[in-house]
Length: 152
Image 1 (cartoon, rainbow, N blue to C red):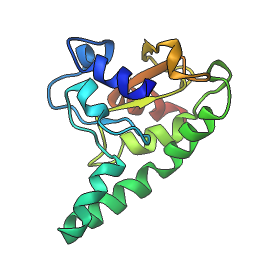
Image 2 (tube, rainbow, N blue to C red):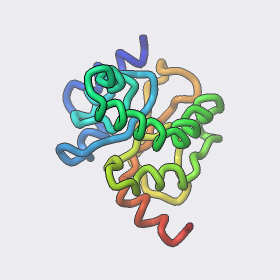
Image 3 (cartoon, rainbow, N blue to C red):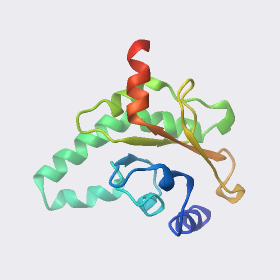
Image 4 (cartoon, rainbow, N blue to C red):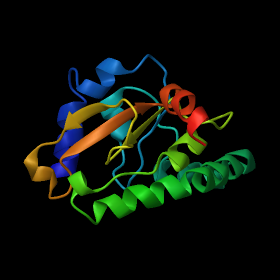
């Protein structure tokens, strides 16, 4: 599996995103691919794997549902970009900003397409990952929220 090999390789040593993240930063990096936290060395703000805890704790179930709902529109944008060639796809800033501005929101978001007009760190992916997946982009929630306040 190309994605599993990519994550495994990225978890050893340094990589562009891990090197840029402060210790303990929470990152929203969605998708069906578990264990992306290995590549980052930091907590994932939301993942399907975290849903396993809902059977043990009501509070966990409520928080999981809240985070899933809060990230739904951004996840939809990410999914749409998987269906088109990545260079042609852009993600609207509003759903990323809304997630970032949550009181309990992530510190960073990883997206599979650019948000026009905002600084991002780009990580070029190996060609075996597949068509439409040439790069990932790391955005600081602080930058997204700060820069977008005047663009509402």
